[in-house]
Image 1 (cartoon, rainbow, N blue to C red):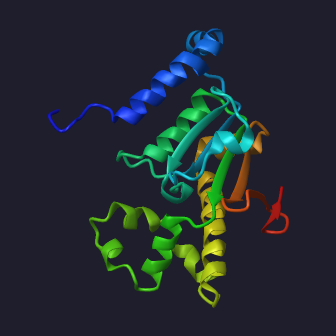
Image 2 (cartoon, rainbow, N blue to C red; image 1 turned 180 degrees about the vertical axis):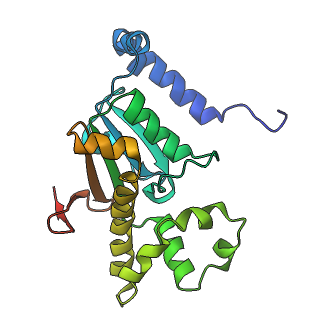
Length: 216
């Protein structure tokens, strides 16, 4: 693997700083995590966006959340076709192996993936339309929801609306997984949809009874 290079020096320095302080001061905790395995109560599906810091939002410790990140926090529908399905595999592992009690989908403001979907739907992203675009084909999961926001004239409002639809679309798709639906119906698993405003630090939760999001 000649293409692989040594870690950048600034990351090496940060690691040694953490090992000398964060790890050294909590060595027993880390060793317990290693020996006891993971027992998270919740899985969080969030965006890859570097500005979305799930553990900071909830003040979570290591071992508390099983976290999966992808472009625009999307979950595809249940498709047991033998192909590679990273998100579906993570969901299956969390639900059937780790037996998490809560499954949380977390969307966010100013999402680049959602913006790409908008651009595709409005004919402004030919590079995402080509069949070989991984991002474009991934955003096809959200594309059907565009009709729900197409008449909105304010671009910022339109994007925020579609960001929240990325959350609800994922919740809908999660319920197509038989092992999720059965656990939800038996009261063993609950699904939650959240959207966070990065700039304002706000957090909104989806309420199915009103089909809308409300501040937490």
